[in-house]
Image 1: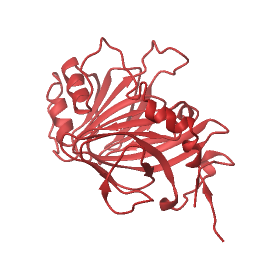
Image 2: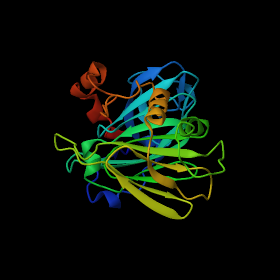
Image 3: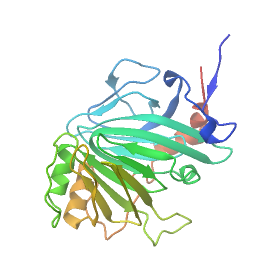
Length: 273
């Protein structure tokens, strides 16, 4: 007898326990630039990623030099990954009946941009991004971060920080890009909670950042990220630099993905043999 698992929560999302990792498909590749490697449920061997390929829970994703990846999850949360990055989706729970979701990701190297979908806003504080030295609690936001060499390259553009000793492999920069206090269209103001070195600190709005130099060290900040540092981080993610203080979705007018969901393909993710 074949059992079918579902991502739909029939009770409170907190009551949903782990389903077999291989049985969960959580999203789709929206854009693939150059050399991106991943595993999926359909193809468990490491292979070159393709557009519209399904993304599986718990499988490693790696980008090569001059490469980028953009992933759209079932709840319309999306994330963009820069070159030479390593990450995976650890947890994803989505209840479309309640329009509620939660996400857990691990980023161990490279630059990363996360933009939460509306269902995630229904469960503030239940979504999290982990790096080797920090945990970032998400409360509906656009957050960018860099780990390792990318973090050091960006923080080199930031004046006025206290002295620190950085670990080149695990140093982490966390930047809350928005939405700010002027959020429109029903959007909530962005907010994150950062835990590192036994200390938890929070920021809300937009434009502020934390820097964690290495393991066991408390966050430096919050501080207003300089325009030059913000530009450097944006460029790592394949985006243009300063844009008059505005932020934008990296999935603006993506007809390929719109067609994918309009055709009902996204609904089929909720049931996997």
